[in-house]
Every structure is written in structure tokens, then in C-alpha cells.
Length: 145
Image (tube, rainbow, N blue to C red):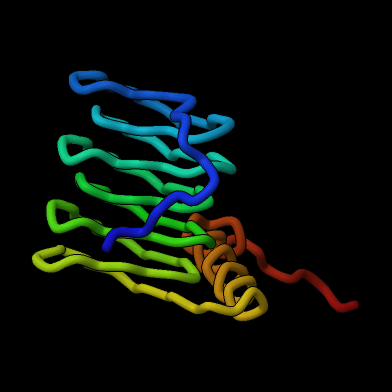
């Protein structure tokens, strides 16, 4: 049984089949993607990634259902469902994870059902990303305090 989106039934934004978006996308509400996105996606709502969708970037949402291909990380505190047609090549950070048979999931996965532990894992993730991007890697202390 796939993860259900309990309190949202209306999709606010739709990226249809054959559509291509290059750049980051920030939407307010429930979004379904059936096309291609080359960029990050951020929403306080839920995301459905259709079977024909391809995303290269980080997804930050309340909950995510994956039927297509994601090459990037998923951060969704309320839940992540990866359907049998789905593929995730990246990290997954959530409180609830459901993975169907025949899924390809390649990357670190943290699924903790506790707000404090989730926030700690998210903080660790953000720190690793900042270091990897060079934000902290270029920091060199100078002199003495």
C-alpha cells in the first residue's frame, strides 16, 4: 500500500508530460510532475513524481511519491513512497519510508519516526552539503581569538 496524502486532494501545480523545466522550482502547495525538471524543487506541500518524470535536483517537500526517476536527494519529513516504477539515485531523509518491490534506491537513507532525531539528521545533512559545496571547506581560521 502506497503512502497516502491525507489532507490534500487538489493538485495546485502540474508539470505535464513533454514539459521541460531548467532551473529551480518553488511552489506553494501540491505538485505533480510528469515531465522533466533539471533543478531543485521546494514546496511546503506534497509531490507526486509520475512514471514518465525525470528530475535532476533536490526535492524538499512534506511528502513525496516517486514513480519516475530522481537523480538527487529527497527531504520529506512526513513520508516518502517509492513505487515499483521508481528510481532514486541520491539520499532520502524522512520519518516514514515505503519502498515497493523492484525499486532502485542508490544512496544513503535515513528514516526516523521521531521529530528530534529527524531534525538532527536534517542538520547533519545540511552541514555535509554545505561542506561539500565549499561553503565550509574554504573556511580557514586566521590568527588567535
